[in-house]
Every structure is written in C-alpha cells, then in structure tokens.
Amino acid sequence: MNEPKICVIGLGYVGLPVALSFAKKFPTIGFDSDQRRIDQLRDGIDANGEFSIDTIKKSKLQLTTSIANIENQANFYIICVPTPVDDYNVPDLTYMQKACFSLSFNLKEHDTIVFESTVYPGAIKQLKKLLPDNATLRIGYSPERINPGDKVHTFENITKVVAGETEEDTEYIASVYSKVVKNVYKAQSIEVAEAAKVIENIQRDVNIALVNELALLFDKMGINTKQVLDAAATKWNFHDYRPGLVGGHCIGVDPYYLLHAAKKHGFHPQIIDAGRRVNDSIVDVIVNKVLSRCKKGDKILQCGYTFKENCSDDRNSKALEIYEKLIDAGMSIYLYDPYQKDLDVSLEQLETETTEYDCLILSVPHDKIMENIDTILDAIAVESLIVDVKSALDPKQNMEFDVWQL
Image (cartoon, rainbow, N blue to C red; front, side, top):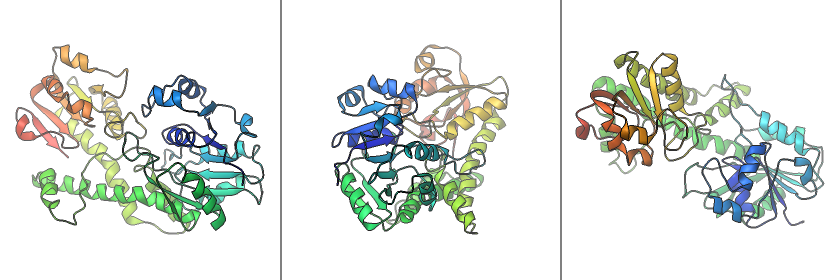
C-alpha cells in the first residue's frame, strides 16, 4: 500500500485538530473553502482560540483553498465539514454533499475517504453514491469526538472509533489513525459507528432533560434543585447530571439526526423527542422569568454568550437565544463574554461605570467570569433578580439579591 498522504477537508473546530495531528506523522494538506480562514491560519491565527500561534506556525501542515491542486498530493481524504440542522430541525448534509462532489473529480484508484462529520445511520451509504463508482476506493467512518475548550480529551488522547466497508478497509483505516491517536476501536460496520456517534450525545441530552424537568418541578415546590442533586449524588451509582442550557453543535443537534433516521423506519422515539422538547423549552423558562420581574427601560446584564463554559464556540448557543428573545421583547439588555469581542459591554466598563443594572442573567459561568464575579455583582442593584442558570453562585453569600437558580 502507498504511504498515506493526508488531505483534511474542512478546518473548523473538528478539522483543524485532526489536520495538525496528522501533519506530525504524514504529509498533510488542510483544505478549507474560506479564504479568510486559510489566510489567518497561515499567519498562525486560529479564530476559534483552540490553538496557539506557535503551534500552528511550527506545524508542517500545508494550507489551500483549491481542491483541484491536491489530486497528486493526497490519497487519504478526511472529511470534517459541518452537519447542522435546518430551521425545521431536519439534518442538512449539504456541506458533505459538496465535499463529495468536489472530491469526485480528484479521486484515484485505491484512494481512501474517511468521514468524520456527525450523521445518522445509513447516511454514508447514501453519500457514497455521489462518489465515482470505483471498486478500489476505500470508504470509512470515524466519528469526531472533539470537545471545544477541552485541553484534556484532545484528538490525540481519546479512543477513536473507526469502521470501513470491509474488514480489510477497517484494518487499513485503523492502522493510519493509530499513528496519531492513543487508542483505536474498530466498529463492526459503518452503520454501527454512525449510530454510536449520535447516541453518545443523545444519552447526555436525555439525562440533562430529566434534571431540567426535575428542576422545574422543584422550583414549583420551593425546593433547591442543587441541594437535592448534591444529596442524591452521595449514592454510589447515581449519575450526576446538572440542569442548564443545552446547545452547541453536538448535544443540541445529534438527536435530530437519529429522529430523522427513525422516521424513515416508521418509528417514533418518544424519550429522545421528549428530551429535545424539554431542553429547548429552558430558553423560554428563563426569558419568562426575566420578563416577569423586569419592565421595559430596566437595564439587564447578561454574562455568557457561548454555548458552554470556557470556550469561544457560539454555534447553536442557547445563551444567544435568550439574548435575542429579550431584545425582541423590547428589553434593554447588555451582553458580556470574555471569549467574545465587540459585545455590548466589557469588564473594564463594568469596573468603571457608575450606573447599576436591574437584573443579571448568569447564563454561562466561564472561569474568567467567576474570577471577576465580585466586580460584576458590584454593578447590580441591591434586591435585583439574578438568574443563575448553572447554580454558580451561593445564594446565602448573596442574600442582598434575589437569586433564582434553575
């Protein structure tokens, strides 16, 4: 077999770490259709904030926006393009279809294509129809497990699931991935790997939905949810999930991929569907809580814009949905997030301005926010409502405010 020459298609949150890792072991090209992204990476700048200038500039990764130039430089293609849902929560495979169409003009005999993008079971089989009818092509799937902001479970340190159309293909793909990742698990089929990917996040979605529903119930009962979960967590086999907003490009999206596939088989997964409805409803719960206490003209400070703590990723951010819905309701809301530039307010402004805010929404408690929480609280008027989405504050230490926790 020829020595692998890697081409990673798509250099976003998934593709860039994949490309940088493979570039340590193999000749590797990184392709992205966004010229600005390529220009920034050539300057050593990762706009997503996941990699340092030093890491990028020291890499041997080649960068290009011209897929036509890679035909003779690559024989192992890894597709890492987005797989979102549309406005109706229907899977959108447009980016993958475009990638397959573009590659179809460049593929040679015995080339390998591995998809990393999240899909539903059976999707790779459909996408294969867009590729040349070449019996020597190796087709595989290795679902991404990138966790933005996580410096521990990095691409190279995790177990990577791989699968090919044949046992021989699986073995070859596994042998290539094993050069760059710590552990490789060989799934029995591509469909098994596709299904494994979506249920990893569905499991978390459903469990968070359960505690979100419990939080809403305990709020009605006047019981502190955090205290309940802390007590329950003392049991050795209790699974300690916490309530909160569920967004991002994985947990808030992947369930819809399996729901879509289930419909094709005439099956309606009630628990998965119910979990999505519960988690999507939390935005309105928080918005209604604020609207019940604040009037137009009140100044509302929202801290946290991204979809989760300690990263800059704002894809499918439920914190952003809260902000937008309050804007639509005519409220005066000011947004602060240390991971985002050019927002409504900065930490320096909070330190120096004299006017007080009438409400605080602590939607994403980044470490950088909690390190400066005293400065933030000093900007909030006494007895004002604080919506503490992730129970990051101790109500007993902040009794001068009306702290509401999910």
